[in-house]
Length: 226
Length: 226
DNA sequence: CCAATAGTGTCTCTAAGACAGTATGTT
DNA sequence: AACATACTGTCTTAGAGACACTATTGG
Image 1 (cartoon, rainbow over the protein chains, first blue to last red):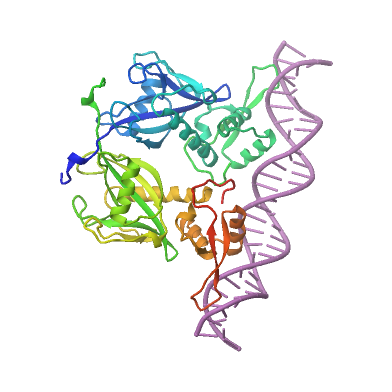
Image 2: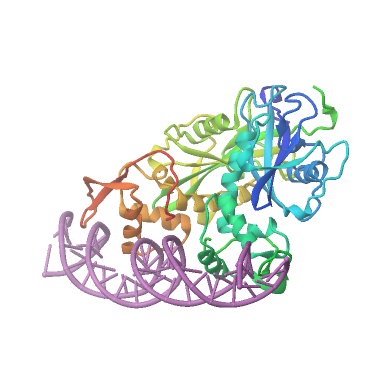
């Protein structure tokens, strides 16, 4: 190589994933409890070091599988690279972060040595987090709020069949505001992203709710903003 | 360290910057001609390897200064981390990219050994670029298009005083569509970002145009989208 | 028939977009 | 006076948001 490598910074690379889901009509983030130093015992985002032969995206998928037991089709997107000096007390470690959206029904926590007590925690009740993971979560929420308004990303956080009520809760939880039921239905139907099915959700002691499904399960940008 | 470092990937880190400006009412990107291998002689984004003691943002500012002679207050934001295997033929090199907006009047190309013929090139006439720099430029244009619609970022690509015509050209060039003059003025004035000055731009052989200025020169998000 | 949630329609107001002529300077 | 560009206003239409009652099931 031509360049003088002695002056270059060669950081370690960690890949951390912010996994969002909707559970009980609340927006939640996946956290794990750290099993080793530094920050042993405290909550942190699922993550791991980048291994030889991996891309950062491959590593993110590995983390999702190992630490979260997530195996389904996941919406996964690179978020940001965090490089603040001292963010890891051991050495210069860059964190290349991803954010993921998963329907809660697709999560299967399998007990292995590697799954260190993963748990979904409401974004309204986050504990202290290790490293700069608080910043990472904040940043990813901002990104998610933008994302849900100009893409069809909602499909990836909902089950295949869902009620209009559930769909509305996704938007309310992410945008952190309540929306009028009638206006929501009107506005969302205009987008043309979903269609009625003939199935109904029974089981309550009330009028059953119609189930809808997304026409496409591929990422797409909207022409009209939500 | 507790983890087994032998399996970890320790990439080189390059910081590359996409510098946008508006020149002759066209959106342009700063390119330099590579002085060494690989891709010697071909056009590339200004960039450099991350040095010890630098953050990626510090490195981006260094690159701006060394390769573009840019010294003013620059709008600078991290864009994305490119890590496709083989993107650099020498070794695994991650490119952490930034994008920058500068008023063309603030660029001062000073001839040094390090400034390898930097030049602003219209985004409509880009040459072949080294590495995956074409992807980087495409991605940054998308980001810029979004940015200009929900922030006041336009201030950072225009001179302090500017005409409504220039302002409109910023939007037209970035959004790649033409906009009705009257509607543009109406819409933009509603945003409340700029104010009239008493100065006029003279010099043509026609009616002089009033000069405007941004009320604030700090990054801010809009409540109403443009 | 009561409880509980699902589902529906109208009105007002704001903003987007289409559109063409007048004003003010220079030469 | 002619030229060149700056500047301005109205109308139509679409969508956002406020708002309250009826429908359908289970028990």
